[in-house]
Length: 354
Image (cartoon, rainbow, N blue to C red; front, top):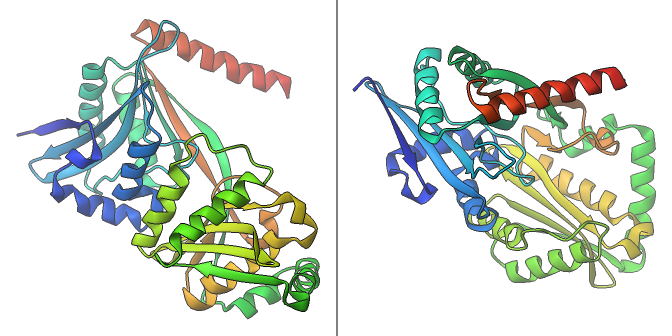
């Protein structure tokens, strides 16, 4: 066997031996775990998409696994293979071995793209410093696809470097420290404010109900997939990743934040507060409370604000990195060439409009 490409229509169909690859990548981010993909498969995937998990084996053994979505072609859209990601995802990184060569990858991609008759391949939200990024780009170029990198978003994070919460607070700006002290004093005055962090299955039903109540009273648009967040909370509880912070005022839950802690890394995943309590700044107070737990109890090595360059994230984090995507067009197909032309035209418009 030179190499063998296999395709699976569900993560449940993967051989048990592949689990170790997901376990390894899970250390980099919670949303690279097999359990994460199973949750997305159960709650988010729509009728216009098919789950396609491609695997590559050579004489040396398993070389990689590619969780993807195959988008069904319509009259005005190409046949597209995309990364198995959505707006709930923060990182994509197919599990591959360090021994995977450009030739092996190029040969396997050529077969996959030929078998699926894909016109376009698009992988979103990857770390451009990950060696696999360049590897995939070069392999796609080798089979004649036209590639381009594109910016997804900035990612603010905090290398902890063994600091305690007290040490961390001293390094924040005086503006943030003073504001937090004033608001926390006001929030806790008279015993009216209370903070809680739920980490286990105890009171999980209450926690999910509280989250949904707060989220529905917040400024955020309704969840398009209402089963996903409750499912994620249950998954995190089962894996001991859950840090669900809730702020109460007069015994009423008014703010909540979902943090995910795995393998020494705390990801600030989702937050919401009831708008009628905005003057109490419950979100700011809850962030500090969860940060203290992450640094002093969980003793994480990194805190990650995940998606976006929101100004408030700079108050809490110290470093910034970027997430990029990779898109590749088949110039030998009508739809590949058409969308390549549209992509180039869009870039030129942006360039001349600056």
